[in-house]
Image 1 (cartoon, helix red, strand yellow):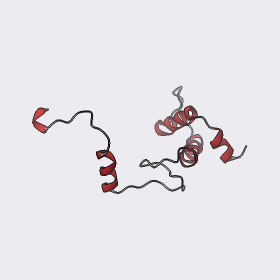
Image 2: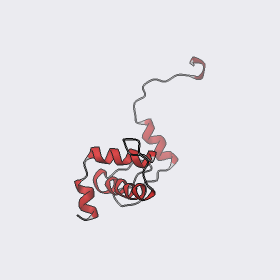
Image 3: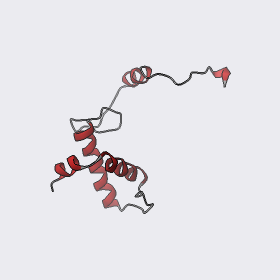
Length: 93
């Protein structure tokens, strides 16, 4: 099976588990990942983000294969459009 076929066959659950393992450096059972396992898993996570998720979230790989970078203005606009749960003034806290 080639790399692209492996990425396309990956389930969302597998992606989440690999992503968490890469972030923590440990498998779900607590065993540490070897450097080779972490490097290969990171490649799979990045390829999945680019090919399947086509993510435009910051710190992911976009559909073009490049890391997604956003300006401060773009980030501010993104977060302004999301509804707030609650807003407090400094004196309320």
